[in-house]
Amino acid sequence: MENYSFFDNVNKFVGQAAGYLELPQGLLDQIKQCNSVYQMNFPVKLDNGNYEVIEAYRVQHSHHRLPVKGGIRYSMAVNEDEVKALAALMSYKCALVDVPFGGAKGGVRIDTRKYSESELEKITRRYTTELIRKNFISPAQDVPAPDYGTGAREMAWIADTYSSMNTGELNALACVTGKPISLHGIRGRTEATGRGVFYGIRTAVDVTEDMESLGLTPGLEGKRIIIQGLGNVGYYSAKYLQEGGAIITGIAEYNGGIYDPNGLDVEEVYQLKQEKGSILDYKNAKNIQNSIELLEYDCDILVPAALENQITAENAPGVKAKIIGEAANGPVTTEAANILQEKGLRILPDFYLNAGGVTVSYFEWLKNLSHVAFGRMDKRYEELTNRSMVAAMEEITGHQLSDTQRSSLVRGAGEIDIVNSGLEETMMNAYYTIWEIMKTKETGSLRIASFISAMEKIATAYVARGIFP
Ligand code: GLU
Image (cartoon, rainbow, N blue to C red; front, side):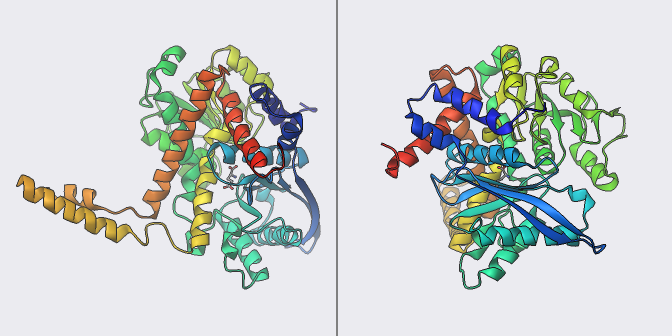
């Protein structure tokens, strides 16, 4: 795997999709390349008094729309190629789900387990300062978010550093999304990617003709699912899929996996992980020390929700699932995708399936710019209108509703209801769009259909700005 380039891998798919579009070569080259790549090295004083030089990146892939948007990853796998690929995927992801941003990604090459909280805070604040120095962060230009190894805590440090260095900037808190609610984050952002994965998979398995051709019954009920990764994305994906009627039969973590054909209780397994740092020895489940083997276990749906490059030409022939839901970015290599395609599998591509995170980030950014929470202005008004409607119906029909029936009918939408409904609408619409393109253009794959849809929108934005004819 030495010569593997994740960025080349993404561009191979882009090249395949370009075959279905009539784009001028110059425009295609512009779409493919990263507009700005910023690599930095900065020193941090550790708790023991020693200094360490940290390698970090921020890549802005496409400026066809501003700000650019994308998470910041803390991992030892971070390098320029990886960040470029992930930034590119963000451009296609945003375009696909009509989030009006360009794509970007940040990466800090550290193993978070090796640092104390105060060291992580120093690294995060210093990284943010480096971004500020080069205009690689601001509500109008580049808005980071959580990704692998980061979360609301890191976003709070970033927001605080940015706003204290930009006093007087009214919209300063819109410089980053995925913030804690107490710092003007939005309800539902933490769960958003996993919830989006659930909506995406549910929509896909509801298409009867597709399920018939895969030899599966329509609907999520009873589908056997194996998940790789029980981090933020994996945990919420598994939780909502289980609540939706699926059976989670296997969970693979980097330090060991578990399997039980009768189903695992996601919440219990997650608690075990929180307490012991490992999910091994859960009830009657079988331990799988080399957890990558779980990707080849029998199941209906396989959901890789960890890192890229997990299903390769080596293990793809052994995959038994009928559907692969790419919750992670880039978990299936091009070669593996071709093998799976030939086996007749259906792949729900990463930049569609995990778009829920950036979708709700967009809602958070809007909330920050408008300085008001969704539902604040109209919730009570909606309730009053509904109440009078129900009262009128009761009077006309002569029937009284029960208190429970009445309260569920009159309830006005609060922030979480609006966020989740906007997310569900986004994920379902995008699925129907790419499914339609797959059928009409006979792409044979949802991934190529997704690239076609995204590239068309990016091209239109460039042309509209008069950059290309
Ligand atoms: N890191 C997430 C992703 O890969 C979210 C990005 C964002 O919210 O800007 O899509």
